[in-house]
Image (tube, rainbow, N blue to C red; front, side, top):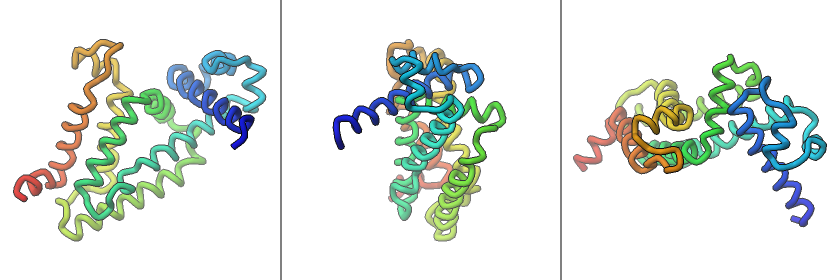
Length: 209
């Protein structure tokens, strides 16, 4: 990679990160290209060298988030070992939510307004969920986990792991953690993991073995 190519990549990443922050806080309608440029530390003219419109940038961010979440999807861990697969997914998802809370907030804001910008991305998301459901169904058929609703099991894991980003202010008040201090990731991960392993009957099996 040449120095120029590296600079362009770094600039695009800076623009994307700034867009995520601004869109997460103000939504598509409430965000201006001027605000994104300022957050990225560049001029509006420089921003428009890399993007044609904020709508195009919004779509790019949605695509990035869906692809990023698919990369950490729990099936990639150990599809033949449900306990490891579930525990690994929950840890990855929670650490990502705690480190990059605006990603979850951006996506939640889009869902809350009816997901009008999501049609180009539903197919990939549905495919990933379908693949995961098939693996969960196989675990059930093989007696590796207790019966669960494969789809709702996934949705519930998303709800728990994203909660700590989307409702961070409430979590901090209830856990008595100041804004400048990190949340206790290990405590959160341990409780969430235990919750979902217990639902599958895996925690009890591990204790017996």
